[in-house]
Every structure is written in structure tokens, then in C-alpha cells.
Image 1 (cartoon, rainbow, N blue to C red):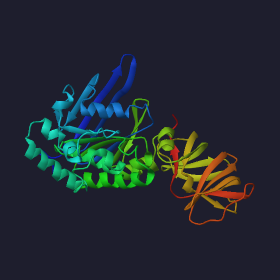
Image 2: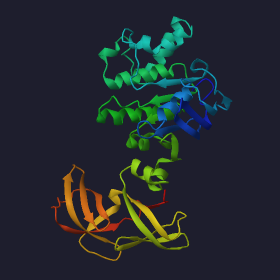
Image 3: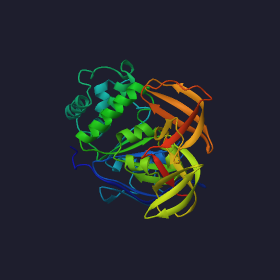
Image 4: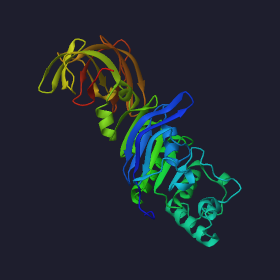
Length: 355
């Protein structure tokens, strides 16, 4: 548990401009105390600048930033109770693991013994007991990552920030380390803001995801809500794969829409849309292959089929364009040219409001 307990972070209409370039444009959100919130988006969308503004490494051009209810907008990084784990880990190569972890309290003048004790405590917490006398060059990527986390935790900050913390690790290790970060965050009740461009990582660790696009927030919410009810085509396509198709809403009754997807017709939640042109986002696993063509199915022809171990990636040519289909489980390979019929699962087919 931290000294003062975890603190919330609040952005109120915050912007960041560099000359004529707006890197973050009128952004408002809250990171609740003790929660892990991910800033997700493509490179250049403003997510790292947002994180640096929480840290005080950038000072906002407009708006207000509050940590634990206190206005910190104009405070420097040193005056905020916040620690950051950088993408490169930024460990000191000439210092041992213990010296790296004890760096914060040593610089703050807490004395050698006290600093050592605090560092040992946090190194044990991240599973590095016994590694105290090694140097960063003698550690694996995952172990270096943990030293960086221990060093960030040692002063028990109110808010812990991660900037793309897994991008230097291989895929298998990434999964393990993201689980460790999530476990640590929950066990210690830490407030964490976490930047990534990897949507699977964001879905796996977050209490809330804030999707950024072109310096603005495209949508924020719980992982499942963003995946199942994307606010627009950008979010639908960025979080998971989605087939985006132009469709026509033919009628709306009691919040349900009759939607014509080419020759097929389906009933979907209307999401506030009226009759007329719209888009639908269909998850690749929500397209079901069969041989029978019915009123609620699309005729198609296999154009590609790839075997990926636990699933098949399939491209199907249809009257509404080429669609991407994922079939989980052990199915036989499908030859290009094979006629098929596509029907729609009960979830993962969502109307998208027009841009």
C-alpha cells in the first residue's frame, strides 16, 4: 500500500501545443484511484504526450490536471508524486540491480541503509530476490523490465506510469510480463496509466481503455464495451479485426433495426440510428461458414485459406466485398473457389453510427 494510498488522475479539457502543432486536443478523462487505465492508439495520436503530461515532463498548454483532487497542472515532475517506467527501462548500466532500485530514495537523501531496505523490499515484490548484485547487462529483458518497475515503485508513488513497457520483449514474454504488471497493480492497489499501441495488451490488462486518434479521444470505456460496441469505424477497426461494410437500415422498431447486408437481412440493436445508409462492423469470428444459403445468409466463394494452428484465417468473396473470417477449432482446409454461405453470430455484429 502506498503512503497516501493511490490517487485518481483527472484531465479537464487539456490541450498540448508545440507551436502550430496540436499534439493533444481538448482531452478530458479520469483514472480512478487503484485502477489501470490504458491509453491506446496508433503512433502519433497523442497518447505518450498525455502520459508525459501526467508525469509533469510536459506542461499542458490549456486545461487542468488533478492528481488526488489536487491541481498539479503547473507543477514540475519532481513536485508530483508520480513515477514512470520508460520504454527503454533507462537502467544505469554501471550500477547493480540493488543500486538501480535504491536510486530514488538515495537521491532524495533518505540515507544508505533506509534506501537499501526500501529497494530490497520492492525487488522481492517483483520476484528479483537474489539478483541484487547483478548488473543490467547480466539480466534478461523481462528481468530488466522488473528492475525498472521496482525502481519506479520504491518511493511508493500515488500514480505509476508505463510507456509501451513490453515493446522490447518477445511475444511469449510479453504475455507473462503484462500479467505480472496487472497482478502487481491489483495486489498493491496502484493507480496505473499505461500507454500501448497493442490492442490485445490493452484488452488483457485494463479496467478502462481510452482510445486516441489524431490528438483526441475516439472512445473510452471498459474493454468489452469497446470491443462489442465501438463508437465509430476507427475504434471498431483498431480494437480487434473488423469487417466494415456499407449497409442499409430498412426499418427501426422498438430499438431494433432491420439491416440489409447485401442480399441478407439481419436484425440488430439500432444504437440510435434511423432508416438509411449505415455501416456495420462484423468481427471475423462472428461470421459462420456453412453450405446452406438462407434469407439471413450471404453467398460467397473462398479466395484464401491459411492454417494458424488453433484457427483458420479465411478470405471469402461476397456480394458486399471480400470478408475476413476466423474459424476456431480443427477444421479442414478450404480450397479457393469453394462455394460457401456466411451467416451471422448473435454477437460481434454491430451497427456503427455514420462518421
